[in-house]
Image 1 (cartoon, rainbow, N blue to C red):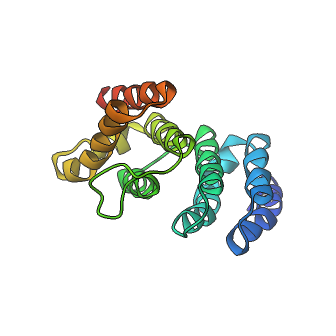
Image 2: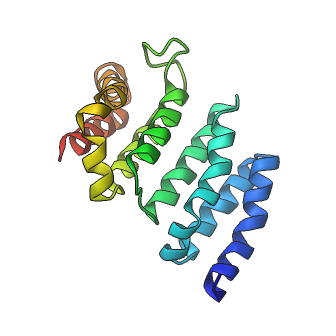
Image 3: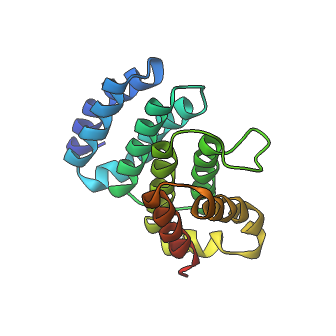
Length: 180
């Protein structure tokens, strides 16, 4: 590791360790505010290291506000890095969908509109941050079954939600997904 990566790792390690051991609003905000201060190339190098504790925490039952903060931190991560594979793209989209759909996955759940908006914004950012090869693979016929739940959820949000900003965000995200 070169000096820049060493320095970045030294600043990331304590925050990521705290986040995986004991998630809190403070720790989540610490990571979110740290990301813009790091070089984008280093953020890309440590993308999986940064993403792992966020993904682990999103799998746990947490309150809506904390989940929203974690999703916003994930969005911030992909503001400073890119998605390099379709498998990563779909893994993260599936994780995000789990935050806003019912257990039987046939409807949007009754969680806060702010969390739903954060999820829509994060999905939007993931697709916009995807490299061309990842997008090419994502739109292959084999991945249609993985893409359809994302489209379905976005259509449901655009059709049924009351918050105008959420409806517009869902429509914008659909446009991003449809723009090949």
